[in-house]
Image 1 (cartoon, rainbow, N blue to C red):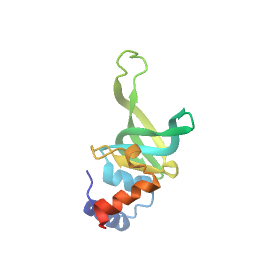
Image 2: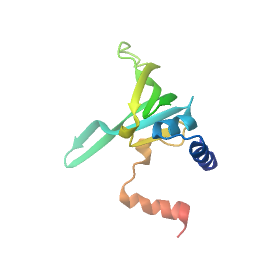
Image 3: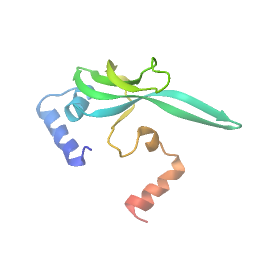
Length: 133
């Protein structure tokens, strides 16, 4: 898990070392770590009666590095040739333009991006749990 003080330190280092792109900044913090990346796409939309639920599509993989505005990850994928087990594998190198990234998070057991999408009504719980009444 990346702590706030580490992020602040990396911001200062990025300024000092002339890191210019978002991809380079992300790679400086998360190189060698697994992240999930949301590109504002929907993986699946389930509709029941008058209720529709969208599930965000994400890339997941280990950050290899960056070149300019291109973030490079060793992507995790479901092996479609293994129809019984749906085995999860890595080894597919993916190049992502950082302008398309809407959000990303480290895969660290502290919730997924899907968990972090809140309804406006749920923000009251943020106030009650973290800010105080």
